[in-house]
Length: 298
Image (tube, rainbow, N blue to C red; front, side, top):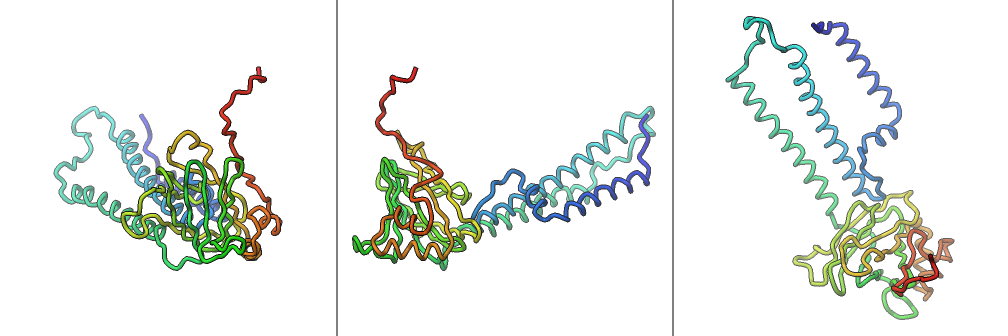
């Protein structure tokens, strides 16, 4: 027969659990890493907001799980089959306060979760006061990016970069900046996706059903300079899997030099070289569209 744990045992277990939590708190970055629960690392403030919602939702779910598991184990351990009916535990059938509490508690938890989901969703979908705008045009099977408010002296049109069969388009953006994207398709449905944004938006060939439906805004965080692959996330035909682009995040100073070079008539590649960046994509490469078989390979 199992012995009932003594009060001293419960105290020791409580101190051990508290010590573990306090020691973990000595390293905030370690806590954040472990509280991600598989959530990927993003480069935008919106991604961070979603990560916080995800982390605390999992913590809440685990807390509920611990309570349920504890009640199950308590019942299994201390309310086993007794030799006589007189040893049965106290019955709580038709206990109205208990039933009301067990009914109300889930509704309260759902209401709290719903509240924070709406708060996070409103933050992610907010589109006011952008620092800059980018128009995205998707087509089989590549991308074009325009920078409204700029003028390319060589063409008298807004500065733009467009991909080709042998060229991956590189979208250059500054860090620590709010960027509003407006997306459109020239043919079929595509989907604009940068995995590090932790957000994607379908790109339709028709006009949006309401203003802003084809837009989203991200706040690229400071210190996230680097190259990130972008993809089409909607099956769109033969070369869907190769419909990639590259997002190049640079410092604000570098971006100012890059923008001046582009408006001065430089190509995207030459302007990137002028700020010490690779003139071509580094995270992905063009695909071979010849669709021929190399018979020399055995």
